[in-house]
Length: 206
Image (cartoon, rainbow, N blue to C red; front, side, top):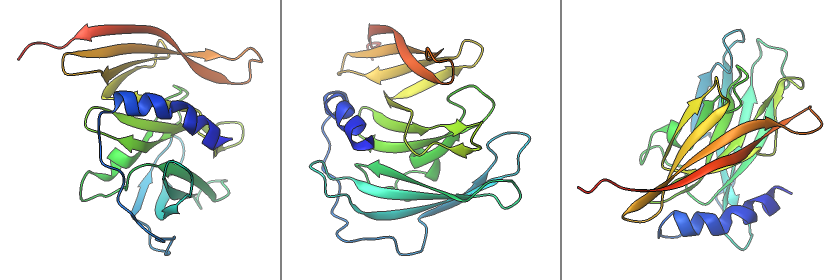
């Protein structure tokens, strides 16, 4: 089901992201047991730090080649069963090119006091596409399917309004300013983002 959602946003990515080279061939670079990233971070003020280890896998074999990254999450000091989340990315995550938090970071994208996982799906000259894996408070775990994706050149969070203001490069002379509103789904047991505004703006000359 996750792959179907990925294909839905492919056309938008390649229209807005700008021209890029295909990802370099990583061949049969399966998980070797050595993480490419290891870091510890708190997902809330009242919980101990969680440990995150990211492993690089191999191409997934689909029509649009993607590298599969596995995020191993643990927290022995908390009532939390170790968890693995798989993320598909069109780009090689390389800390020598960008800092670790450019590829994976924690952001409270749902404004509930718990940080969610922000993972890079595609990086281009103009924009970057991120996937967001939500912390599920009732299940005390991260959801294993991404709950939101966003093409962006930068964004601002407004917790009091439960809104994101997102900026997307269009072409050399214009960009878009989008506003997403976090709303409850009808069943009242979950939330989703809806785009409530989309303005096309001219870039400042010079």
